[in-house]
Amino acid sequence: MDILVCLKQVPDTETKIVINPEGTGIVTDGIKFVMNPYDEYAVEEALKIKEKSGGTVTIVCMGPQRSTEAIRTALAMGADKGVHLNDDAFEGADSYSTAKALAAAIKPLSYDIILGGKQAVDNDNAQVYAALAELLDISHVSIVTQLDIADDGKSAVAQREIEGGAKEVIQVSLPAVIACQKGLNEPRYASLPGIMKAKKKPIDVIDLAASGLSADEVGQKGAKLKTTKYSLPPEREAGKVLEGEPAELAAKVVKLLREEAKAI
Amino acid sequence: MPQGIWVIAEQKDGKLKKVSLELLSKAKEMGQEVTALLLGSGVEGLAADMGQYGADKVLVFDADVLKDYSTDAYTKVICTAVKEGDPSVLLGPATASGKDFLPKVAARLDTGLASDCVDLKLEDGKLVATRPIYAGKCVVETVTPDSSPQMASIRPNVLAVGEADASKSAEVIKKDVNVSDADLKAVLKEILKGASQKVDLTEAAIIVSGGRAMKEADNFKILWDLAEALGTGTTVGASRAAVDSGYATHDMQVGQTGKVVNPNLYIACGISGAIQHLAGMRTSKVIVAINKDPEAPIFQKADYGLVGDLFKIVPLLTEEVKKLKAQD
Ligand SMILES: Cc1cc2nc3c(=O)[nH]c(=O)nc-3n(C[C@H](O)[C@H](O)[C@H](O)COP(=O)(O)OP(=O)(O)OC[C@H]3O[C@@H](n4cnc5c(N)ncnc54)[C@H](O)[C@@H]3O)c2cc1C
Ligand SMILES: Nc1ncnc2c1ncn2[C@@H]1O[C@H](COP(=O)(O)O)[C@@H](O)[C@H]1O
Image (cartoon, rainbow over all chains, first blue to last red; front, side):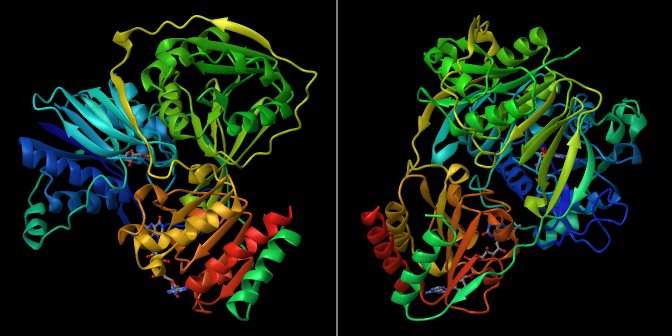
């Protein structure tokens, strides 16, 4: 099977967010960037499918130069090659213009299934996989915690997490976009030989011209949703720390929750 | 000229979800005509009452194919209706299903979607949406200046439900549902019930959460006991350390790579308060932390900090809550 994985490079989840002086975004200097955590599940699942049925795993990533590190990480885990949409024109994209660029890069490729994360933990949009599927005129399944591909490679059965721990079991015809959720698998670490091999694996760079799109369709210009204001949420203040014997503490806090906080 | 506010209501088992009323109440505040969209099978009876919460009209799409949620069917029905009705604003819930079809609808309509918003306002006809990013470490405002409809999905449990006006009822309009099997590329085979079947974390009014300190899965029972005493609308969550250690299931994880929750009350038991955990629960209205380490970072964010052993305190807390509830 020809398997594509869409992955994004995002700030490490430890990052303390600071807004830039112009108020137009966050300060990115000094931030450690990593592969989006959910995309790790997508890479792992792609490698498992390849191990079982053969084929190729291609990483598709849109992002600035630094994103090659995330692509290399996936190659070191075992993916075969990368496609890197890298051009200043792609900067400042929303979900729609991201999907637009990804779809343009993907259309000429051969693919049986496309895997991605259920959400990129920077902008928390949880939209790109669905928009991408729509633009490619295929279906998607989101928040997937189990995936079984039929032997003929023409369909898959996916479990999708819904409310209250329940799951929908969905049969989807392939190709489709699958958005991976924690629980699907345990992502492997890149081995040392893997890291060495990754250095030689090819990464095709696609700039605006190669994407075949116009500057108005991608990045900030092509974004339908514009961000007008950035702010930090108010810090929570530490409240009361109660001391005493367990029984006292329990009685005290229940009284406070009822009378002061009116929370129970 | 696109006009009016449309709200996609969500119902489950023949009952409107609370988030539907939250959305209607917000839409009503915006001062334009409010139209609700109701999809399902055998749901028409719910329509008229939606007027009490602000719907002027309800478009009812009642058909067998809509009995269970389906990405393809919902997308088709909603896009067809939007193209015909041309609303200025289209709102939906950021629930498991809303999060699934709204981005597909937006892409099909070539418009933008502000997802998982916590507030909305209409300024001169422009929808200004407030949404957290970086799991709530930053907040942005967005607009959709050049495309229509202006779409947003709203996180459950954040917006207030307005007073019901019993004198009002909505005009109910039955619509045709043109979905054929050929439209369905993804088909629901079955629904596997959750272990707990309790209210979902993202919709819970109260959450009792356990961390690595719980030591084993069986010990979560004391948290479920406390949840039970606190009443309906309460459920149990967990830190990633507890999930990764196998004490709790993945769907119980609260945090940056788990669920972002905003209950009225969050009780963190044996959770240190790592940045990724705080990101998921910092918008809780009241936070109680139980931790034996007085230096634990969670105390910096808690309204009430209890320093001590959770295995001693939690059962006593359950007793106190039961006592209190018995007096009510
Ligand atoms: C990419 C990434 C994503 C992550 N996403 C998440 C996420 O979504 N959610 C999340 O929670 N974490 C997440 N984490 C993990 C996070 O960094 C922490 O490791 C985790 O939250 C710690 O869980 P904990 O507080 O239960 O455990 P610990 O940090 O080990 O804390 C246990 C606490 O229990 C206290 N304790 C011990 N015994 C008792 C007792 N008997 N009574 C009372 N208190 C006691 C201790 O004093 C300690 O404070 C993520 C990490 C990474 C790298
Ligand atoms: N710039 C990008 N390049 C490649 N894939 C992306 C990009 N942005 C988002 N994705 C994919 O879409 C998923 C959901 O992202 P989002 O909709 O931004 O939350 C991610 O987990 C990735 O799989």
